[in-house]
Amino acid sequence: MQKFFSEDDVREVVRLARTQGTTPLLSRRDLSSLGLYGADLAGVDFSGADLGNANLGRTNLAGANLAGANLGNADLALADLTNANLTNANLFGANLRGARLNGANLSSAVLSEAVLSDADLAGADLSHAQFNQYTRWSIGFDAIGAGAVFKL
Figure (tube, rainbow, N blue to C red):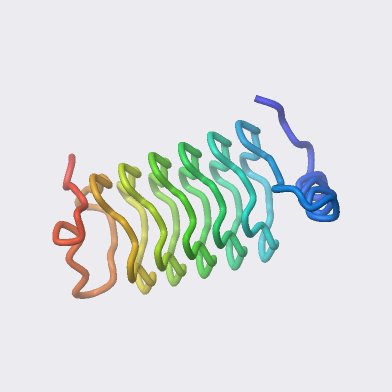
């Protein structure tokens, strides 16, 4: 995995790709522990990237491809993940409090110990997503009814 050395490197790659009219490609990159709070990363391809422990609070990730990405212990509070692809993503221990996940694909994602309190999951695909007794959902949300699977 190629390591980006700063948050500015990530922002510059995204800016250049958008200037050229192409999809920003950051797949399979080591972006762990970066602080990208409030960044506009809509539509970026992060498939297979390591974003563990990253600060992505209030970040715009609408339509982003995060399939197979590691977002373990990442802070995604109040992030916009509308229509994002999170298939097979690792969200173990991630903070998704108040995040917008409308229409997001979370199928087969790992949500164990994640905090999803006040998250908007309208139209989200949670089929086969795994959660455990420490996962925190909004009051009244039926994770099993939404297709998620309880797993120790």
